[in-house]
Image 1 (cartoon, rainbow, N blue to C red):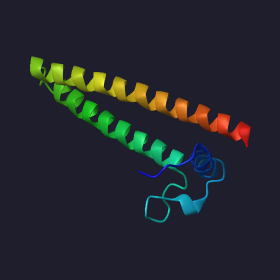
Image 2 (image 1 turned 180 degrees about the vertical axis):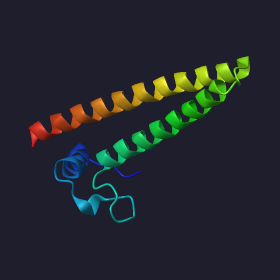
Image 3 (image 1 turned 135 degrees about the vertical axis):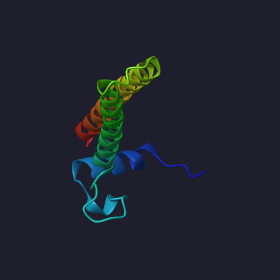
Image 4 (image 1 turned 135 degrees about the horizontal axis):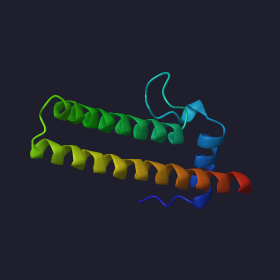
Length: 107
């Protein structure tokens, strides 16, 4: 395993987040994210959108008369999953943002 120094990691994070260096684009397609932080944000957004779609679909089933206990339990479970995902998205965004802010002050 390669030993990467903290300065090297900090330099990468600093370039990726502070300068939106397009050479750091890891999406492999044009028009993609220009930083890993933006890519992380997009991934969280897509995940939350997909979960919201699942909740909407289950809600529609219940609204159209499919109010069996199994559907209600499934909707409750998906809603709790959405809460879990939302909390983790917020926590990860805040944690990474604070780390980037700290790195920015040190440069």
